Length: 551
Ligand code: FAD
View 1 (spheres, rainbow, N blue to C red):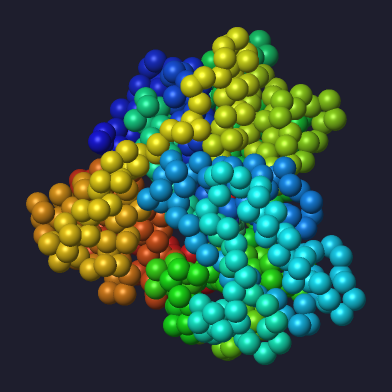
View 2: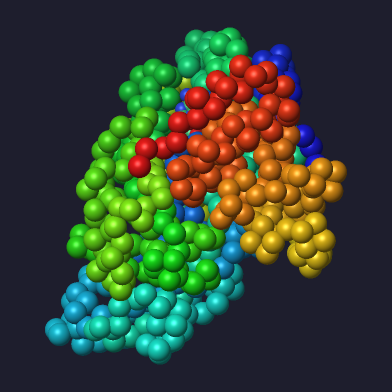
């Protein structure tokens, strides 16, 4: 596997500046990484620049579901659900080690009014169970041959055994349906590494701060390397703006009237321990009806549970933070449906992100693609903006974007990424069988093996690191499965260049550890120092600069 560390970062920037690229992608979230991969696979010389760390925007703040979006069914948005279910199917095949099926327990209570947001309220709730069932049949049907498992109705007894804390008072029916779960940051990094393996040249901490033009056409981007403070120009024949909630701002740099308006919608999650909710590790729970007609998920995440999410308009997109009312809202609904009293003391962390919801602004704006999920917009000077969509649909968004470039080039859009394995998938079938035995021989516990599975066949690289230096098999936090070998891997192969890159994104210690990992920061910094050549002063600076998200 190719290295992708600090030296490669400098080389890549130099290469982009010296030689220019065919396609420059701005933004290293899932959308930008997907576009870089698609364009590289089609033979373009691709560069990608990200102003902070890869996946530091919305792509690390999602509910981490690869799903069709069952809540869109009652809105009759079948096209959207079908599109996402198809993408879910491709992802479970192209990255089976990272996108895994998960059962969702959907309870129905006697006093339900509009579970899942169904639009019609039958008198006395008669027939609600049947309506839900029809919806679940439709969900299975829309996934077609790419489906996971069909839904099933389960007994109340079974429901209680799957989610012992679920309130049984008034429970009249229960179902299990299937979607998939992933690690959003790791998925983004995996797509990024796959793009790099196909020739894409990538760099984080490189912010686009302006454009170069000849006449009206944009011919390049001015990029500020925030590690050196230097500004460079990267020439590009096409520039793709994949900056999520920042897309309008980046479009404004191109001058003229922006073609769209991004309406950010904030979503907040809580991370809590699994014990108070007595959740099983393989079943999520759907809270079917909130006071504002939405649904919430309780999703198992190793020894923790993720609770989310809220959906409120507006806010500071630079600093997504959970407000008190967001936290109260989530706790109130959990305590309504679960037989427990979850309080603020149970919260390990809160985290927030912004959905990049898009509205076309100029009626004359040339809209290449405007689907319910995402839009590809052709803006001033030839800037191509891709915005909206979901983590689940990134591949389809990338396909639509690069098709626009192919159209301008007069090329046909082949090959595409429908069946392209992501890095880690190629030998996964074989590695999956031997990984537990190899890991046990190195004294790694089962939860660590499950964590290593997220790397697919690249888990063997981590095992080799531990063989060379057994201390790398040690846990970083006593009740979490992260090990020191991952820190080394992050620096060598995933371009982690700050302590925050490791503690917040490559590993999720910032979200999952009590105290947000402050106590382990010096040890992790020491290990990173050995990889990245930090001196003692830089180590200290990194520890001081590691600011865990506020809760
Ligand atoms: P981002 O991830 O925000 O990436 C944009 C990047 O552009 C950022 O990293 C930013 O730093 C960079 N950038 C900005 N300006 C510049 C510049 N000038 N120069 C260089 N770089 C720049 N989807 C699902 O499928 N499943 C879910 O379970 C799910 N849950 C969600 C829950 C919440 C609360 C939210 C908010 C969203 C959820 N989504 C989910 C949607 C999904 O997370 C987003 O659609 C997706 O992550 C957006 O990715 P993106 O790459 O477009 O944006």
